[in-house]
View 1: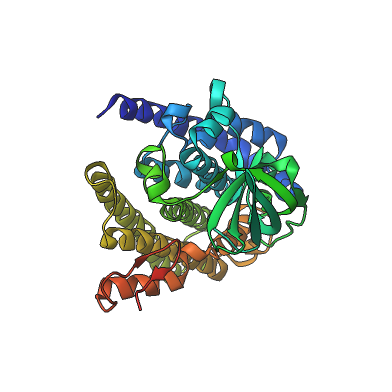
View 2: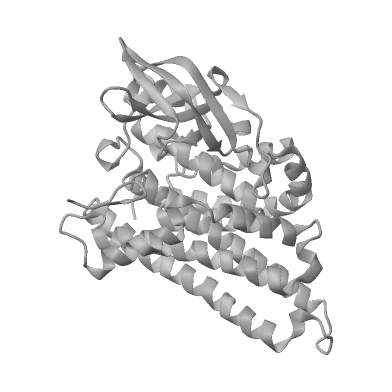
Length: 394
């Protein structure tokens, strides 16, 4: 283990203790966060102080530079406490790290120098809605970007754009106050994430703050930095799904324990106990698959610097299965928790959040289908993964 890895392990242990201590505050503030559609000031301050927003930031810039297995541990724990906060933090940590990994040295020195670091929101891997026109020294950017979690805590926003004429795909990092933010987040689930829309109107972005993403363009960032944003997003999505699924099962367990065994409650029926055991095994089994997959991935990344097609496929498949497990547990809760799903409280909140979060395109059932295509060996030679889709040679 290197000096950096030892220091990272120490910081992860300290961070997990801080997240355990943060759990009561997240329960206390959850209702107000939903009402505000963003984390309360107390939660925002606690998150910044904990250092969790630096989870994926390169160590050379003062970040934790967590390994994939460590990301699983941290995001699963935080999402167990609050699904909306876990979703928002994993998005902010990923986007902040994306900027740090891919920006050139001058921009990094400007933004991350003297121990400072920006907090970045945005959608660096979604090019829908943004257009850029080349000008001397930079690009003129116009567009609308939807669903950017954590805008309320961000200092900067990543804007993915397609360049007119060339079709080139780039990311522009801009200050939040350079954009028009639409306060339009009024959704069924993930209410406290402040996943607002961002609008740029004829905005000039200097070349220093424009970058390309993909493994070949990474400048720094350790193991996660070498993966590319799509796999990092999938890793975080899987961790989020595991935390949410485990919390829903624990809420059901509390309902069962509060009822006499001889009662006629649904949560004390033989059918409930059989279904509870089955879904419990799914959570444990999916986490075991995630740990096995990412332990192998880490070993390969350290030696080879990149994953095989099968490893990348298994990474996406494990994420998709975690996503599906969380969704099925939500259905289990709806079936057996009765009116408690309809009343305000943790069960209802996690039920809504689980359904909202499992809509993510990077972990949908379509991903499972494409993983099957790759694993079956029926695709032409040279087929590989793009950001979220398969690239199949003609």
